[in-house]
Length: 267
Length: 287
Ligand SMILES: Nc1ncnc2c1ncn2[C@@H]1O[C@H](COP(=O)(O)OP(=O)(O)O)[C@@H](O)[C@H]1O
Ligand SMILES: [Mg+2]
Image 1 (cartoon, rainbow over the protein chains, first blue to last red):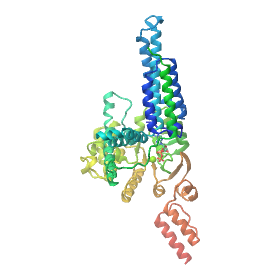
Image 2: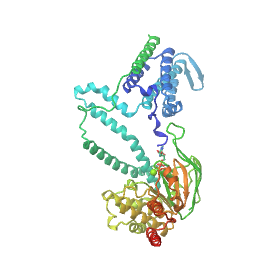
Image 3: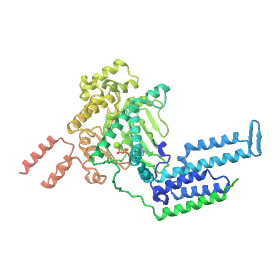
Image 4: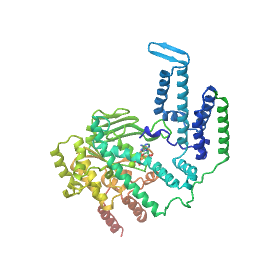
């Protein structure tokens, strides 16, 4: 648990990005993801990169931590780059050595796709790095609210989401605790033949399920005891409000989008 | 096995915003055969400390020796399994670790992993059951059908069945009724002597520490705050209060008694009946 779970884990803070309304963040990131696919030359990419880096710096999350969280996807980024390098045969031949034949088109496309990947992952992980799961859930509930008209169970969905998010850390802690307890009783998770290691999962899973069911039952009981009966007419402790800063970000983002569309090459 | 900590520091999630220094420059010596109580406020690092004793955690800095095993940064001993078979750990709420379909199988789980023969396991089960106060009729039952107190005893039996030389107890009586608490503690105290164990007890109960331990270590915010014999530690009311700990009731009582009657009753870890006798004599003398 010590080092694995930190990809995109919320880092408390009081930066501009932290204080934005979660709906603003989700909307902007959604359109950012769309616009990334419209960028196709140096200028449009630079605009997006500057926007992403600005967001990253103003989140005040330590850069090293963000980059470390990206480690699992570095591999993917490098892989797509190499794929394009070897497969795309456009433009002029730049390298011709033994079995390697690299074309300028391949290199450029490889770089472009890697940058896209990097931007997408950087910006989406900024969302989870600076927004508590509960804020994200609230935002989703608000944003999906129109679907209530067609009897879509928006509130229930949001509730399920927040309960799951709430219990992920608990379950991880529990997993850690039980695996330590079983390791102390001589279970070896790390060495030995595969069959033995798979068998070693049983002593971990059974107690986990037992406690998860117990927790679920207790939670249901506690909710009923406090008179919970769904979303109808329910008021909120935390009201989401669009502030000036949110408007500012929207305007800023629209300008960024306009620059991207103005500078990209057409035809 | 002697246990030696040399300048041990433990940091969780180092080099991240969640970095947390749980233990800081801890040095201690726990001689073989002693009964040591580790006391401290919640979050003071007690559980982290004891998780080093069977190699579940490794020190971020410093060195730990347990008998002939050495633990340093990034270096688990090669014979980790042997270390774990010789250091038994009863975790907080050990009943959460039960998983087998029968009580017998669950108790046998540890010894089996450590390569103990079937016959030997069977004889150990017969030995540990009475020790933890369970009857053999429960052996075929599912551990999940038992009461909370019985489940705890099954889990403890599972640790005892591995026949450890060092036993580590992390708040073993948390959540039990007062009678259950007393029974469990008496049981460990008895085993400590009859099996020549080295016992490390993490507890919140000053009474238990005073009653059973022959050495007390107080942790505060990951640092060693005090250590010594219980009768020397527990009279330092001010120092204990400073880290949010109380003194045992008997010490508290003696202090108020001394104040009220303007006498001196030296505290040397006497039992309640000895104390009563002493007071009776004093009062007679005064009156
Ligand atoms: N796996 C972990 N990751 C990060 N921090 C932890 C972890 N386990 C414990 N801690 C922190 O280390 C400190 C000491 O914890 P612990 O040893 O469990 O204390 P105690 O047992 O005395 O209550 C606590 O502040 C706790 O939050
Ligand atoms: Mg603890």
